[in-house]
Image (cartoon, rainbow, N blue to C red; front, side):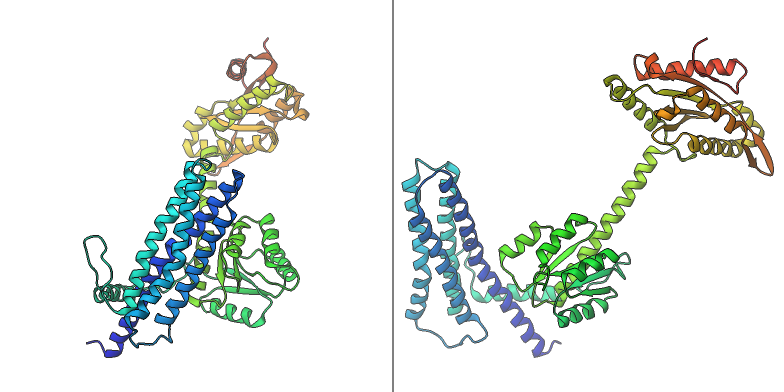
Length: 494
């Protein structure tokens, strides 16, 4: 059985949830009015219309409304609120005072619609009507608030009347369900021991942050000014930076911009920390590339949640990049030999030929070559021995056919090379070097030595009308090399 203390805690928590809901019913439309008013004002200015007085009346009405509601909310529901019942007249006066600035908002918005109906875009007139509709929502929110503090039934919502007791019961159920949720934060293995740089000019703040994060298994460094922070990042890029806005030498926003010039938010997440908790400050930090924003004084649970979230997002991006890189390698590489596969080498050939046609590059050559008597190698040593020969062949070719030249295995024992390097223009000498190097190789397999030779056919870009014709011509010359005794490269028709 629960103790009375537990029931009291649940009741208090439920009341806080209910009050939050009541306040939200007011603040959501009130904040939206400010947003819509800003949009309408821009449209009026763009149309070169004069409505400064009316706009100011709506704005000041909204400001008075929010301030008066906040004062009333603290007075009647805050920690120092009196439980003493007020007279009906006092509640009527509260309702009247809250409605007065609301009437100004509605009235001047209607005046703006009437005066500017023929001059403003339809969307702007619709925005003004939305301000009026939001004001009607606030009227209902004021009624709910006043009825709540009176302890009486709230106004009807549709066909259903909800009294304050049932509202409190619903909130109590919500509070209890929240108590059943495990919101403890556990670090994933991928972020344990992550390196965090704390940048704050207050030693106590640094110590508190370091203490909190270290207890969770995170590694922390501190910097008490901008120059030290830059030096720490240069020494070793941290996994996350907690960056104060106000620093003695370089302000946090300038430091943020500097870091963003060097690192993306995926590579170096930065959470700004500041006593400034206004919308403009937060928006500026996010706009400059901050991952998140933490207001001072820091809440330990929220701090850890945001730190862990940023670190996990960074770890996820790193794993994603690694996976993409692995997939790219698989898509472009011949799995046995490690050189380019058929698709890539033919794509590069097509690209080179188009550049040749446009005059962007000069003459280049294509070499089609394969291993002589490769079937005999497979028959004698098995496919494992054949694979060793193919790997050795690829390594030898790759050591000679270097960038910007392209080398790929196009199938079986066949290889294709695109020779772009100007230093390789003496194609006969280049091919002879390939042939000699391959012939001199000895492949050791299963305590035996395998010697191989290769044959090749060469075609020049200027000899062909397209890349396919270029490959066919090289292939025809490879066939001639094969029928001419092998271990030879044919560079031109006889």
